[in-house]
Image 1 (cartoon, rainbow, N blue to C red):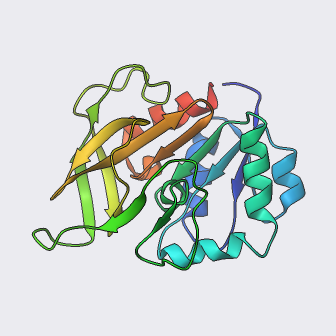
Image 2: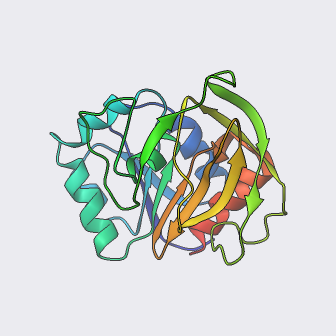
Length: 200
């Protein structure tokens, strides 16, 4: 395991303990923080999140948004998980008044009425070649989801999933990564993905 310090951003949107436990299991040097200065000192940044897109508004008045984006702009690996991945896009119809980071083009939309929402449970990944985050992940591997809104498939999509429509399961561009599913709940596949992030 690499000696990098990984900082998990706590902006009040849950699921921090299970994400931290997964990194702890892998032997990573990981800390959970609400402090921009701690993020600035990190080698890698993780943006988790479960719940409503409006929860991301807490980033804006705390200095956390600027700290995360400054870190990403200097080349630090950034991993968004679930809501944290949706934040990497321009925004979400779930809370149009809150802007995303705009790193990837497009908005998050609600699943079509033809399928049950939220999308909860195991679903498979259709992989594209050349992904760092998905190194050694087998094609059609299953991962665990729980979400009502989805990010579009874009040029940076390295894995997609089908549920009423195709959506981005994994995005990556240079040092920016996002996963819509919960790797900390996706057993060996999820741990492999988190290990790949640790090893970047």
